[in-house]
Length: 165
Image 1 (spheres, one colour):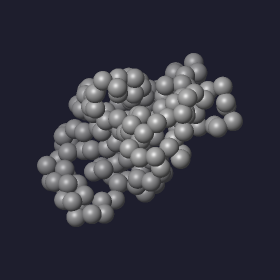
Image 2 (cartoon, rainbow, N blue to C red):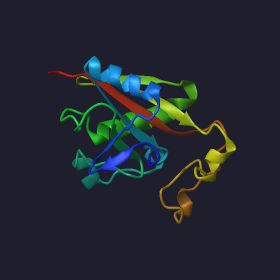
Image 3 (tube, rainbow, N blue to C red):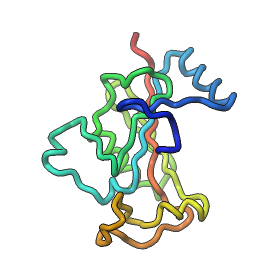
Image 4 (cartoon, one colour):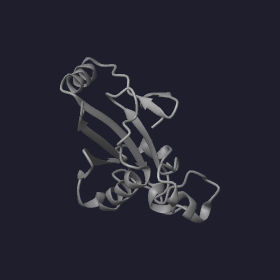
């Protein structure tokens, strides 16, 4: 996630760099699409929320979910799905990732597509090491077998909706 966009306060903003990225973002904006993304990591499989965290709907577990990255909007829309809802959809997509490459759902006016991110080369496994990943490498009891090329490292959640103007 830290390799993607520029961070500013609670949200990150995507800065298109290539001509193709600039064209795609301009087309989204021209056609009144609001687009953002979240990244759900393998930690969503192993870290459970406490009761206090469950009761605070907007809480985002940085060990398990990062975002939003705003592709087109200047601010996070007030009707974005809750952090809990996004985390649970991402967790379900991680569990189902072996059976497909894309999973869809909706939340209010938002369409949400989850796409697994796989380790496509050995160098990915220099940082992503354990099947039961944790944010804290000192928690050895949470560690599992090593990941292999082709294993799912996380899922990207793409959120998109027409601007309601």
